[in-house]
Amino acid sequence: MEAQRAISPPGSNAVSSDKKAASSRCAESKAVPRWHLCVVVYALPFLDAFIVRLPFCYITMHLIPQSKVAFACLTLFSFQIARALTQSIQIRIGEEIFCWLSTTFLVFAYAMVIMLHEAGSNHWDELIPIALTGFTETLPVQKTYIFQLLEPKSGRLECKHCLMQSYAGIGLGSAVTYLSAALLYTLFNFDGIGYLGVAVGMLKLGTLTLISVAVLGSSH
Image: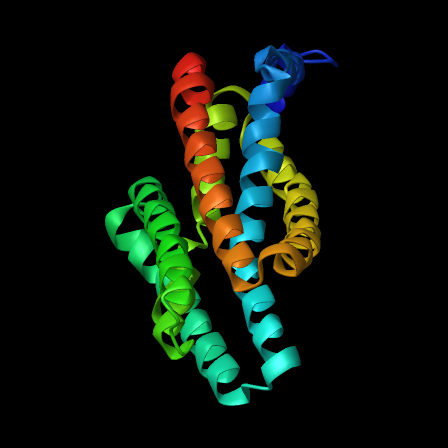
């Protein structure tokens, strides 16, 4: 230690190298296009929150005019079980693959809701597709995308900061879900919820494509 202090004057090379590394990471972080971060940090959690909250709107519509408590509670229970299973499934088969599969399933599930409702179902037929949309909660993939985009350049601290910023997208997505669901319900009854689910599911697939091709593709 004493020998090292004798050799290294105040403001040693170790300190200067740390400063150079920090400034280098900062410069590389700025090199990442801003819209790339916006898509991953804000757009993806916004759509994820929207999709995951939509079944609650569906349940509310059933409770208020028809008081179908048993149907609502069973749907909510099944939906939450699906959300819990999602975490372990994503670990086993990979977040990105599962995100694509579950979002594709979401589009078909809400399309099935529209067809069942137009066919005059008794609503119990719609329980399965609505409950299974719980598998579409895929926020772990957002963490994967952020680390792929930033960690090689900016380090884990910047990644964690971006993850914290994404809560704004989650909150906004939840709010817009309830507002748009109420509007479409007044216009199209329960079919409106199905239309909304299909539209947002396809928009999320488009966002995933954008992230995979344009954002992550150009960052490598």
